[in-house]
Structure formats: structure tokens, C-alpha cells
Length: 549
Image 1 (cartoon, one colour):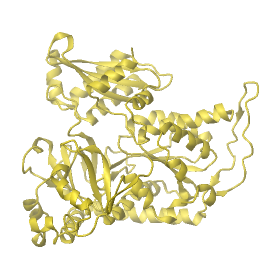
Image 2 (cartoon, one colour):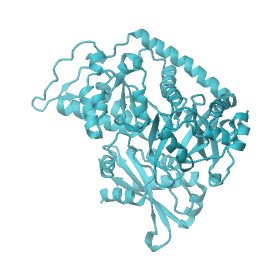
Image 3 (cartoon, one colour):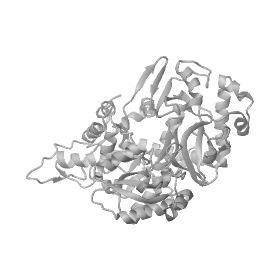
Image 4 (cartoon, helix red, strand yellow):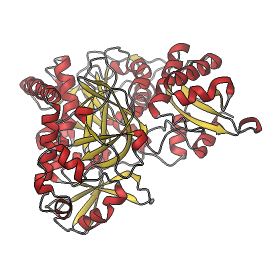
């Protein structure tokens, strides 16, 4: 891949950076020229028109949900009808979803693992007819503690390209932006990994999407290969802000919790190395207005991000994605909770009510039959050979018209001391309520539980929060609001809190500045894809508590 310097058009030169003189900083010229891409304005106009067409197709697919999703499923079934799996479950005679549901059981990684291992050895006609060349090394592990290698076929890659563009298309159509392609999109992603394993390759989904990116899109994508391959996140972010300080950055994509860290490094570079008097990111990258995240909800980070950027019109695009199929849903900028489902990008979805997940043959419902606000375990069928595969994610649908999904946590990641099964989203909402009530902002937060408090069998939740620079908090009001919000959301928590029956009032631990960054380094996660955990096990809880002593 060419470096950006080989393809970008430099409007004019910036001149030498000013130096600090007698402790004084010079103002950065707000009208200084920035390096732009090779694309002429007409490309940006065409890009927006393409976005509007795609959004109309997306909306039509949502209105025709059964037709769209059933066509997706039957395409996969027809394609795999002569495979070993297809013959076992009678794919050749499946005509509608109800036929499929009656014959094909749900599965997890352990049930698919023997077939996947044969496919990794190059065998065809196991789950799909063709050779699957790529296997995504998922960050999770199976129930038996083995690493997961998930099949990613060429058809899935094509679908994923489309769903990756959808979140940006929706934004461009909503904002009516005509010149987006004049600037760059900066990606905060891990190094490209491609390991040859016999006839196949082991990789990660971000790596695969980078390698398979269409050639016409590459000139607008940063960072260059040299920087993208840096593993240490501190060094990577430092090199990014140094190299692209004078570039016209229009969008940043990556894991949401890393955006503010990138911005801190950018401002530090401007002030301490170049000697500029800058207050906000907009002083350096004036056209940056959209951040495309994923993996965690964007809402808790918005106050800090907007403060760093110095503008209220910044848009944070949430996505819900997985190695098993790419992006499943994205923000639609309606202001309503949740993300808009993407039903026509090569994934068929089924949902199992959380209370039924342990059944051998649980009741499954398709997207067109889900109930609003019910908690489900999500299952997917993909063109790469996963059928009714349990992701391990918990989701809710805050709206069914149009269909909007909300990530609620992991089946294995609930906080529970008395079978209350408090989810990721319930913790998030409770913290957000407490931050709003106390007028404070957080860098990040997490929650754990102490069991056997005061020599009894009772427990309490412990909330760890690193506050934004300069903020303070009334701990009593925060804890009381957090507690009330959990009681409102979770019936079992409310019943066990009443009269301190089994759960005591929560404790707030305010972490020293820099604790989030220190924590991720201490647990050995130095990737820009790392997410600060919402729910803590005892070891991580004790580590965070040690910072506050």
C-alpha cells in the first residue's frame, strides 16, 4: 500500500512549527492549510448520493423484514444443501423459516468446533461447499477453554464491506455532507495479522477488512502501514498524532473508549512539542465531526469527547458487530435508544429468551417476531457455515418499528450475587443517571461486587469511576442515584436491596487520574482495540481498588 504522502494533495506548506519562547505559546492559525486527499469534489457528491440510495434500500429492508431475512436464510440453505451439514438436516427440502427451525438445532462454538477444524485443514463440503480460506481468531474462548477460530468466507467478506459502509452512509445521508472524501478517515485498529496455517489463514476481522479494502478507498484511509503495524498503543497513538497533525482528518474510527486518549495526545503534542496555544481538537483538526465506534456504548464518553473537541456538533456513531458476521446494527441519528438493525447484509438472526438459553431445544424467534424490551440471547446464521450459532451476547429491542437493537451484555458477564443477573446495560444506565444527577463526567467506569460484607452473607456493588479532569463528585448522591436506577431496572436487585436484605448500598470508589490507562497496561492489554471492562471479576476489582489507596 502506498503511503498517504504519495497520494495526498498538499494544498500548501504549513511552514516550520513555532518554538516556545520565554514560556509563551503562539496561537495556531485556524485557517492554516491542511493536507487533503486526491479526490476531487465530485467524488464527495457521488459518495453522498450513493449513501442516500443505500439508506433507502436499508429502510425498505426493515419494512419488509420477514421477506428480507427469510430470503437471506434460504440463500444460505440452498447454497449448502449438498454439504455434510446440509444433508444431515435436510436443507434440500427447507422452503421457509419454520422448516429450518424445526430441523436445525442451536449450537455454540464447541458443537461446531470439529467441523471447523476439518475446514481449517482444507476440507470442503463440511459446513459450506467451498474452501474457506480465512478464520477469525476471536478474542473469546469456548466453554472448554479453547481459542475460537471462526470461518470467514469470501461471501461474508463482501457482505461485511457493505455493512461497514452502512454506518457512514447513514451519517452522510442524515447530515447531507458533500465533501467528506476531501479529507481522511483515521482508523485506530490493531496491527494486521495473517498467519498461514496449512491451506488456510488465521487472522482478525479488522485485519481482513483492511486487506480486502477496495483499492479506490485506500487513498483516504490512515494510518499508513508502517504505523498501523505498531503493537504498543502508546507508541502507535504518539506516531499517529505526529504524522497526521497537519492532515485534514474528517472521521476517526475505532473502539470508542480510545478517542479521548488520542485527543489528549494530540493536544499534548501541539502544546508541549510545537509550542502552540490550543484549547481543543477543533483548533488542529477543524473538519473532524464524526467518530465511528463500536464494542461499547458511545453515550458515556460523549461529554468528555465533546469537551476535548470543543464542539457540540460532533457525532458518535455506534455499531454492534462481531467476528461471526460483521456489523449487525448502527446508529441512525434519530435520538431514539438503540441501533438500527441491518437485516440485508448476509446474516440471519434468531433470538432465544434469556430464561430459555439452557434448554436443549429452546424456543427461537426470528427478527420479525421479537418482543419489545425482552432480554434475548442472539443467534446467527452466516454464509460461512455457522447455523443458529449462539454468540453469547444478550440484547434487547427498544423498538420494533423500526427494529432497533441494544447490546445488554454477555451471558457469561453478568454481575450477580443473589441471582439478580445485572447486565452491562443496566450498569451503564445506572452510572449515567448518577453522573447526570451529580453533574460530573467520567473518563471511564466499571463495577464489581464485594460478597460477605461485614462478616455476613450480604453483598454490595462497588462502582469505580475515573472522573474527567477538574471534576469532583458528591459520593453519597452518586451512590444513592446509582442504587435507585438499578432498583428501577432490575426487579431481583430491588427486592434484595429492600431493607438491606441481601444486598447493601453500593460503594463509589473514585480513581486517581490516569487509572484507566494504568489498569489496561497492568492487565497486559496494550491494543487500541482494548475495552475498559464494565463488569469486573475479583482480581480486576482488587487491582482497581489498589489504585485508590
